[in-house]
Image (cartoon, rainbow, N blue to C red; front, top):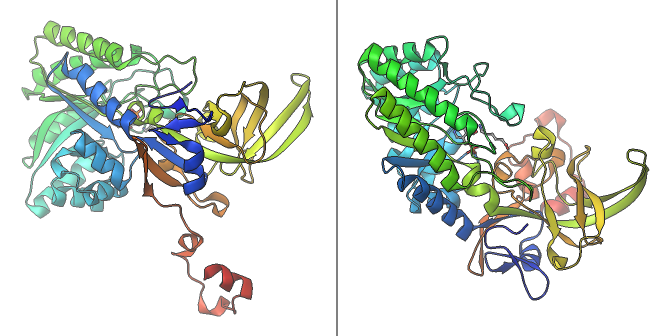
Length: 452
Ligand SMILES: Cc1ncc(COP(=O)(O)O)c(C=O)c1O
Ligand SMILES: N[C@@H](CCCC[NH3+])C(=O)O
């Protein structure tokens, strides 16, 4: 499977963004996150066009939790999208990148006073209210700071998407949002309307992530329109915005066929329009927050192959060959967390027939299998392995487990590769650490040498 601008060049190497991945590995080291700028930009444009052509009152916020660095924020800004942030760190990064605050929306199921105050001070465009505690806290802060805030009420539609249990959020039993079924969402709207410094702008929902069909979104849209109708009927308030979150899936495996942007837009918009018409409601602004579907397929991770071993196995009877790479759990926790599956290829021998069935293992002190079973040309130590579809929820979920250094990230575009995140250095690991005086002893000569 080749995605975005990927192709196999005359040397038989995988190329992305016009850059030879073998050269990238040589120049920047491995593990290395590589982001295909052309593909990312094309996705932003195509997603937007799919909706704009069917529903012009349409706004796309990039869900920055999927991938955020200063450069990515700047690129998303250039593409004219908004940005959904869900923590102080995401808000800080977006603001530091110069992302216009009025196009930022603040999320979170337990927003702190500090996060809310910073959002108010920066004048972010929208705050998505998640619970009654936050509603109360925000109204106190607005009184204190003598300011106002535009809000959406996040509602939980009670739908059950077909995706991993840890990334479902539309069902009633979730920590996120105000339930619709027990009347909490309507009560939240009433309270917002009673709070003079809160400006009610509409409703929000997000049903889950990596959805490979349109059914749950369609169901959620119908429920949200019914909820809009109840809000209008019960409170007389106008629902100017309906935000349906993100969630569209991507291809991790060749056989996966997520709806295209056009198929997704057609299903969502036709459902929305007919539900609105039936309810005799004016058309709201349709907001969305895609993350994975914009950036997932635009990223790969490059690793270097090291140790290999073959062991006998009983199920099915035969052998298994472990091919260990120089990263794993710390740069991609998704296989451990969600049993996520990935495809890969040997970047330096991408044109050779894939005839060996192997297991790709990480190098952590865990059974950090990256890919349980895949077909490759017989791997050799020193080969460069490219794991596909790692643009979303990899870099942002990376850790320093086993004191691994977080990988670098490069943005590739028309044959140029620009470093947008430096590889961590050993001194970064110790930057925030202190040894109390009473535990101090002279550092061994070797540690001193390493630090120089
Ligand atoms: C509120 C909200 N919006 C948007 C997203 C982005 O989701 P995805 O990356 O699946 O498009 C998420 C994550 O699931 C989310 O929690
Ligand atoms: N981290 C999850 C997605 C979480 C979506 C955010 N609510 C994943 O990698 O699939």
